[in-house]
Each structure stands twice: as structure tokens, then as C-alpha cells.
Image (cartoon, rainbow, N blue to C red; front, side):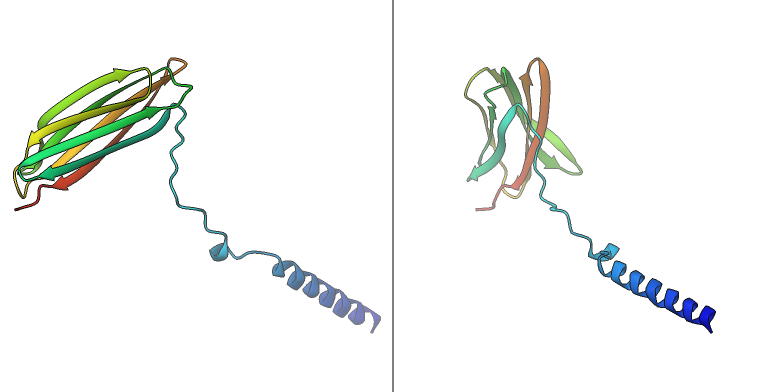
Length: 145
């Protein structure tokens, strides 16, 4: 009788320990969801933006780049493409470099209503002679009047 009582007592204690331990576990499906917000890990780039607008059959693309105070210089190229058939066709490009303030590049182009355009802004900022590059783009369709 003593042997069976000891076995039952040990079983009860182990069961209790497993239940209490399981209460503190987080099921895999209930694990905390990580924040899905993407934040750039830029060091030399303070901000970079590109936009495109249309007024009738006139298009305008503008890219702006601001470097951090620790960066020594910045360079950028803004390129505009139009969609034709099944590929992007080059329209125009502008480049520039600067060591202070904000670098802004602008391209004015003849636009065709109903045609899709893409502006690509490729930038590089140098901090301690180490380049930091980024490329952003925007696509828009020239509205029909």
C-alpha cells in the first residue's frame, strides 16, 4: 500500500508541476507579433523623397536629398522613364552633387495623357569616405483631360 501511495503522490505532484509550468508558457501561435514598420537604418542620409506631377501635357519630377550633419557630401541622379509596350523607355535624366543643405533635382518633360511614367531617384551620401546609397521611385499616369 505504501508503494502505491508514493506512486500516486509523485504522480499528483508531477502533474501539478507540469500544469503550473504550462501556465507560464506562451503558445507558438500566440507569440508577440513584431512591429512590421520598416525604418531605414541610414547614417548619412537624413531624408530622401521623389515625386511627380502633371499639368495638362507637362510633367515634372522632383527629387530631394538631405544629408545628416555628420556626412561630408551627397550626390544624386533623377531619371524619368515612360512605359511603352512592355518596357520602360528613357525620357530624361539630371544629376548633381552638394556638400551642404539639400540637393534638389527637377526634370520637366512633355507628357502624353494616359501614359505611365516612372521617376527614379538614386542617391549616395558619404560619411568618413564610406558611401551610403538608396534608390526610390514613384510611378504615375498622366491624367486624361
